[in-house]
Length: 395
Image (cartoon, rainbow, N blue to C red):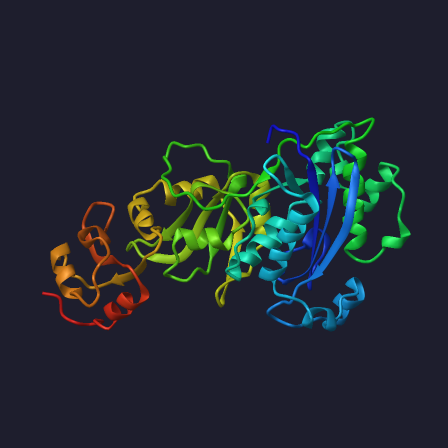
């Protein structure tokens, strides 16, 4: 982003769970979204917008109410996330009078509000996030850029940073969330003014989708970018793995499904992120859910990743990673079985996607057949028809 920005939109989210540096680590739903427009040209702020969000799970602990002031009445009267995001869009359009030449970007204090809360939750609820949620400024990092002489400044919380910058504490805005959003805006105003004159030029980016690709065994991979995800449903693809880590940037081809010696998925995947920061955020999703299953997330090494992504199982992993397909596994095939025989076995009621291209025979490293195959179908209906042929005779 090389052109000068007209506005920043300070953003703050509140869940029914942990706050601060543990925000998003417990999968609790977003129940309050706050934002405030900062006019960078005129160095002014707009009104604070504070909108409650109705969660799918209407539960609220006494501790949450005590800490945040949020009540059950607030939530039952609220709109769901999708409607609140539409309201957010309408509000910005009206307040900024958005035109062809109007530029704005979100700004949060840290990575968690957008990467660890909004993106995962929107993905889980099949809600499409507005385009503006795919780039943002992390105020912590901007502070590090504009105050290089204070190396630990970006590690402090908002209150301490406000004191460091000699900003006044506005006692009128001490409600949970409101005080944070106003402090964020005030810090922005402070660092774009004398003596800092900071410019917001290089925002964080969030990948729209995971890119498949291959990995060479000769590639040097940073150990601090790899995690092992364990407990995956056996039918999971690399796109499912990427959805689990939505909001974090996975390297191209960086989701490798682990296979056992028979070429069968074992419920694990090695995942490579673009940097250590995203790897660390991924570790905070330990025991988060994929459907009804909780997924364990552990540190792993570049060597672990290369054994899978750069190994002989890469052909199988690539086949399993294709989108818009349902995979059925066959076992006990004759070692002499051909693609034509498999196509005939399933017949017209469950056509194989791509014909011969939709069948992959699993082989041992020395090329011998294992008697297993993966077969691709275009939809769940065809796959269910295929499963009805369990224990039928081939040939």
